[in-house]
Length: 121
Image 1 (cartoon, helix red, strand yellow):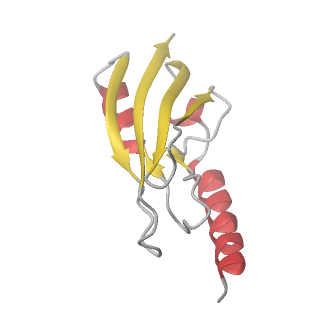
Image 2: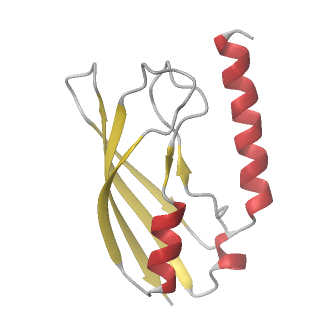
């Protein structure tokens, strides 16, 4: 299967996973907002990229952020464990680093430095 077909198939699967997860409100009724601020680094790029992703109660409870590398298929940064742990402990902020989980192309050397902020009702 060529790269474009694999990427399209991976995109369709991710969309279905999002739908299957349900909403933030369904899983975490006391959460008003989740904000993920990150600095994206790719080994072959000299510049970093800042990104912010927001989740509201109506958002899907799917916390896997896409990798921005063109060579990456089925990769991403899974913040599910960070967010679920924060909510169970009623934590408001958490910081850390994650490497891309892409396993189909060893050329994906992407990393994020993240800060998650959660606002509770």
